[in-house]
Image (tube, rainbow, N blue to C red; front, side):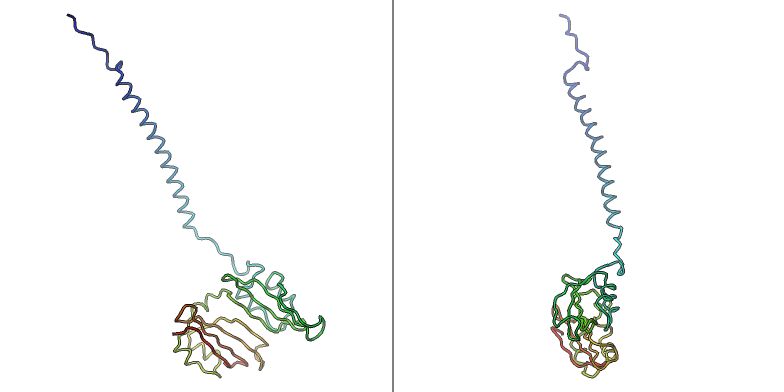
Length: 221
């Protein structure tokens, strides 16, 4: 009997199955490489974006809100129009008494402050002139770094000047209200210091005519 002639290997069914698997795997590898490259490019772009610091708006560019610098620029005796020009926006009238044009006409305006949530500044005008200003939550980086302890608070005595208090505490407090003109006997200023102790610990110091007349604290240790 003659031997059965063998088929060439390329005519075997299993050869083509293996060939198809190899081609499919190669195509898959190529696509994956492209995806990996795109992924690496996206990751690089995200890293570069994250590492590039965002530019914070300068104080003078913050139109319409009261910054620490603007609060300091606003002085006793200014008109409402002068205050608006410094801040860059109209205020919200929150209180008014007396008839306009009379010496007893009093109006309080509130402006948005630059700082923590709810930061604001209030300005009181009487007979068209600023007589008092107060603020809450306006950011003051220099003052926020200075803290007061219970021991330092106890050393502070009524009758001291603000300069003497600063020497005890070690720096400036944050001015939160001011009434009257500097140098006058009735010029009244209140400063607040962040305290060391319980959460929210602080101390408030009130000066009149350049001398401490009242001090209070919460949570100091």
